[in-house]
Length: 399
Image (tube, rainbow, N blue to C red; front, side, top):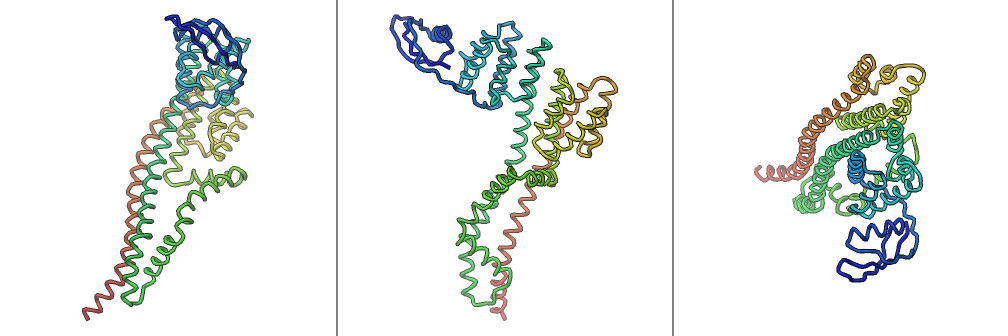
């Protein structure tokens, strides 16, 4: 987008010079007019091609909401984009609106303009907008996209809620253990050694662990983070390891079940959205495959899609895979029999949304006592290893 050096006159008659990014002279004059200035002269300083960068999901939701409202009001698309650009709160949003404006002003459709910024608008969104343009229901489709993105944002928040609490408690427990091993245990061990008694095996293990923390803390503390980064890096390079990692996540007690429900909820919502906007089921399943994010579930979708492509119904295709619960299969079958597959998919999304909330609450209720028990066992082991020799010494003194 060109950067102009301009000269303008303000409402109080002062001449103002400066530089501003704009699509053309007309766009520059419009922007200056909004700030109470009248353009006198403008020259192109340089032309900077800035690709639109990926935006946070909430900014994209806000953009689509405003776009949908203005289109419903009958405002021409170029005026809509000009208004959104001028009222943008961030440079990235302003640049995005400018890029889309320029594409549409050059003769592109809205979906083609969106496709020119793949970092912002994923393929699924572009195709949904294209379907809305073809059916003349663009505002309705954009509204559905915004609703789906908002729901996905809430789902991502729930996922973080599931992971953050255990991680926080684990960090606290680890900090307590490090404090005990580095500062408390060495002082107590000195006292035990000075007593001259025979040291039991559990105390020897405690001394060994404490010495390891004191001498090699710089290696022990970062090792969990390094191992996680190493595992993720290797899994990206080797599909077999990534497949095993994804299988292990789903097999994790309690947490794996919640993760599976979250993925299946995204799949059902995506399939419902594509079906509602007129995208063929097989193509919609391709998008479901991409949003799943888990190789195990992705493989199950591929097998189900293959059966559907060979003539099976949607419910039969999903029923052939043990990955999908029987309740989901029954809902799909009822939707096919009644001709209301859209409603069935909505019910599945609603069912998973409620079930995810309840599952997260159950997992959090289990995590707190479980981690408390772990901390209690660690402290209990330390106390046993420390108090055992002391008790033996006191017993001998009494005799």
